[in-house]
Length: 261
Image 1 (tube, rainbow, N blue to C red):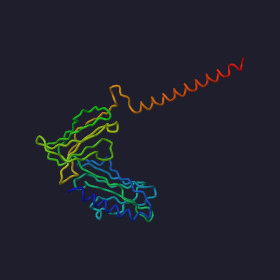
Image 2 (image 1 turned 90 degrees about the horizontal axis):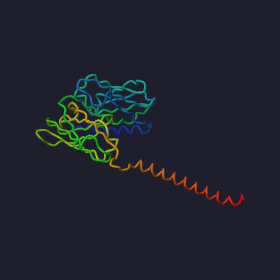
Image 3 (image 1 turned 30 degrees about the vertical axis):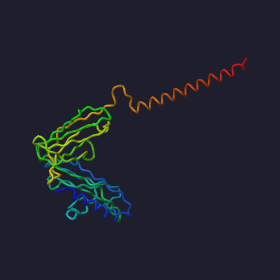
Image 4 (image 1 turned 30 degrees about the horizontal axis):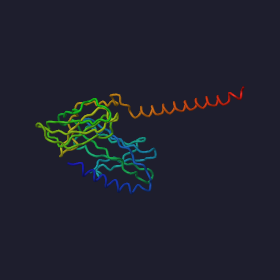
C-alpha cells in the first residue's frame, strides 16, 4: 500500500478542517513520537499531541482510519497521548492530531510518519568519498542490500525527519542507491544510517544499517575561511582607525607647540 493515498487524504482533510478553524485563529499542535518515529517490531511507542494551555480536548488519529480513531481523548495537562504497546505492521502510517479550545478546533498538526523496523536483515551503508571531508566538498553515500528493496531511506541521527528517500537500482545480485550530499558543512556532520522499503509495504523496514560517522572539517591547505576573512578585515579597520587617531594627535601637538613658546 502506497503512502500517496493517505498523504492526499491528509491534505484534503487539512484544507477542510483548517477552513472550519479560521474563526478561532488557533495555532496547530505539535505531534511527536517517543522514542521516535522508527519503532522496532513488538516494542512500544507513544504518540504525543501538544497544544496550548487553553486546550480542553484532543483528537489523534491515523490517516485513512479517521472514523475508527475519531474519539475525543481526555486532556492530560498540556498534551494528549496515544500509546501503542506492541508495534505491528498495521499500526504504521501517517498520524496527525488537533485540539479543541472553547468552541473551536485547531488546524491539523503536521503529519507524523510512523514506521516499523526489524522485519528484514540490515543493509550496508558506505561512503564513496571517505568519512572525513573538507567543508564545501560533495559526499556520496551508498546503501546496498541483497534483498530486493524498491527504495532506500537515509536517516541522520537527531534529525526530525528522514533525510532522503530514493528508488533503488539492481547491482551485484542486490539493490543499491546513492545519496548525494552536496557542498557539505558542519551541519551535515553526524551519524547516518540507511533502511530499505518494499513498494507493497513502504512502512515496514529492515533493521538499520551499521552507523556511518561523517566528519566535516574546515578548509585546509592554507586557505582562509570566510569567518577568518571577516575577522582580518575588522582587525585592519581597527588598526587603520588607531593610525588615524594617532596621526591626528601628533598633528594637533605640532600645531599647539609654537603657541606655548
